[in-house]
Amino acid sequence: MKTKNIFELDPERLATTDEHGNRVYLYPEDVKGIWQQRRKIFYWFLILLYLILPWFYINGKPALMIDIVKHEFTLLGYTLYGVQPILFFLLVASGLFFIAFMTSLFGRIWCGWACPQTVFIQSIFMKVEALIEGKARQRRELDKAPWSFNKIFRRSLKWFVFTIISLHIAHTLVGYFVGPRELLKITMSSPTENWGVFVATMIMTTIFLLDFGWFREQFCIIACPYGRMQSVVMDENSLVIAYDVKRGEPRRGSEGVQRSDEGDCINCYNCVKVCPTGIDIRRGTQLECIACTQCIDACDDIMTKLKKPTGLISYKSENELKGKPRKVITARSGVYVAISIALVSLFIFFFNASTKLSLVFLRSQNPYQVIEAGQTVVNHFTLKISHQGAEKFKVSFKVQDPELDKQIEIVTPVKPTVVDMPEKKFVIFFKFDPKILVHGTRKAVIDVIDLETKQIITSKEVVLVGPTN
Ligand code: SF4
Ligand code: SF4
Image 1 (cartoon, rainbow, N blue to C red):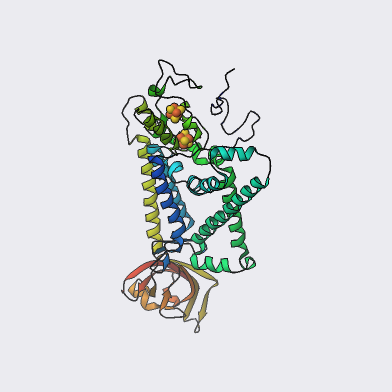
Image 2 (cartoon, protein in one colour):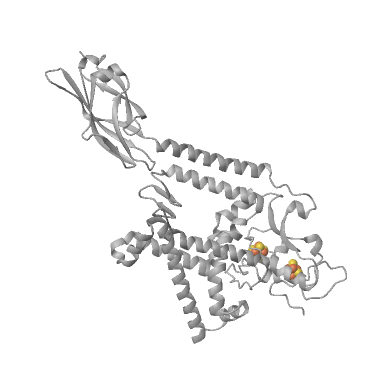
């Protein structure tokens, strides 16, 4: 009786579940090749960037820091102050549409080349696992073996190292929000002094540990929203990792029996053995494929040994596989990039607008006082000045209308007024002769003048009130 190859997947269910719906653990085999070399270099570039960036100072500031409490965003020595949630939202949304644009051109390039999940698992966690538990076959055997000293020792060591790595990744992430100096201080002090940060770091560590160490491809297959979105974003012109059916089929029999009419696929299952999500790419583009390119290298290696051209599995669009030309920019990708640019433009517009001074006059509970035997009326306000740029201003206030300016005295507690924070509040009084009022009110436009440049920075109308007679 012929036995079924263990790498022949059941067409009815996921490779990572058995007939009872239980998880089947994967043991992807190691693969070498040009794509793995490229990925390795790029992955380590990303990892080093991630680890170094929060510790690297430019102009005395961390290279990248997001201070949520102060609404500050620092990048390469330049700080955007008072970045409101709407601005963050615009940046993130623009990034998402840019990823959608890249996906429409290059398929799941994000998953295979830049997703932290893939980068950390493939570059660090799987390497540590292979170092401690051995190659794919040894790992599979260790899993099946009964508990022994050897198994307990290797498993404990693996999870110990995984925990140290996860702690490091989580602390680095915290560094992006609190800054390196604060992070060092927090790390050196007792957890009781920073409960919030401590708990957040421990939660992140647990998530990284379980996800990168155990959940792995399940996240990509079951939980990742981007994976679900790709079918909407991609079309027949998007590049995907694809098996050339015309060239490969009919494939050799799964037991290695040669056939006279066979194509180039010798049915060695190497492409399946190396796949981190356990799929057989010869069944066409699948949701589970994270475009990691491992099957390309595995198959190219076989083709090279057979002295056949490489590329039986390669980056190709559906159109190219059908022999049609590939359109690089399509209407769909054009829309994504246009939305992304529009969102960045909105960000720049709102940010520029928000770096100007904005004034709000908040009237006090007692709208006016009459003093000096009815000769003078006083209006009392709290003035809120917001600005979101890095500049500091020394300002004075003036009524715009020259005639009215002679009749209204503006009194501030300190002169000149210094605006050196994203938001500042102080009291301001307007003293005037009640004769300027018309039916008890008078509008006046107040100019804010920069004392250094003598220029008007901004203006705001205020309504003065007093007795109606
Ligand atoms: S099919 Fe190929 S590219 Fe897709 S996940 Fe598997 S090995 Fe990676
Ligand atoms: S690695 Fe290439 S030759 Fe081997 S089964 Fe996969 S597609 Fe066929």
